[in-house]
Image (tube, one colour):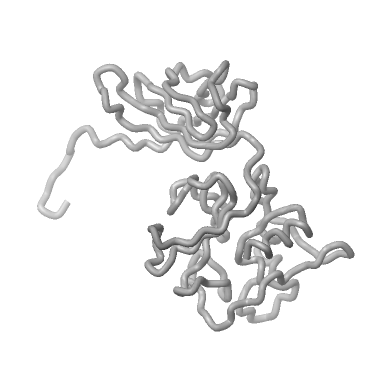
Length: 253
């Protein structure tokens, strides 16, 4: 699959989802699997920038064209309405392979990136993963990294939690991402495009931690301005604060 993805990249200067690698240009009336251009075009993205888009693909004089893999016809797909195509390749235990970007899991049906699902943003390189015999992230998983990573500043998540020392630093904002800069320098944490006033306690290439004296308003968007002046796209804050009080208590709720 890794070799097939690299061949696809050589043809189209893009990556695609694993499900597209065994699709064809023909779309039969009752397909056992999706044609590569179903759904408004193939879901593709430039690996260095990770901007998901639907693009209609076609063979050309310099492209091999799909399919890049043989469809695994002996196994079923994840189930009706599941996240993965009928006929898609499954691992030895009958589960889909998962394709992770440095910012999270690439979801083929929702055209999105899940920053918290399974391994989330744990990988530096694009990585194909089998979750092994138990079907969940654990020590039996199998990984195949591709020699591609992000080349741009990007954020995957901003999580608000209670600080261990509530008396001095009530709230901690942990920002995860990529190419955030090795050191803060003149970098800053931005709320809705302006300075947040947050006190940065640590700054690294993949994580920035800041302390806040109050909880930001609901819907606040967070971005990073690096020391070199690059501003990332914004993400919404994920509030992981514990509840402050119980408003109702009954036998079953």
